[in-house]
Image (cartoon, rainbow, N blue to C red; front, side, top):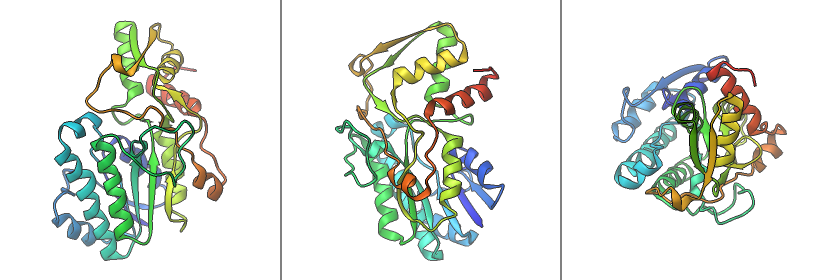
Length: 282
């Protein structure tokens, strides 16, 4: 299959291009190739004449979206509309990557694909706007919500924590936000399976299990063999421009029922990530 991947130089896009290239013809594009927020991107994508568009390109800086909502909606909303319009023109499916931030965190049990979104900030709202564009414009689509991504090809929470722990010997991390950490390579493996099916719709895809940011940081420091203290704090002690959902664990219900292959526990993905990035045995 001929597949166009947007955001191909990002953390997820890089891994996804590598994963898919074993079985498909991949064209990876990024902001330097064309600007999806411009209407001419519709023709540019359509002219490439692929059989599937995987839309990873996004503004993912949560606090940046809050300080510049126009840019957030331009990239995550209008940019997604343009990608979807190109797919509509070609009559091909689209895979859109979304986020746990479409939920408000008021639940205390994992979110189903059918739970009502209620984003707390402009990042979540702009990603939800992208979901709406895909739903409204296309008949064949995969919307995949994921969460707490970490991978070897980009900035992420785990890498930042390990760097700070190594340099300072002490880190403070919030312990009142709970989610599902997800290793990009595990997600890419699942996405590769998904696009080879005609089981269109909304999916939640994250590594199994859940933890707080503090628990994730503590486990990462432990696995990396770094001697540092990882101290728990509350969200109000670490104020940010954007309110984060207190609980955004995703229930991979549709994926598990349709494909019968649960994603492995986040701890196993974290071990592999640390082995590869730090070349340590854990």
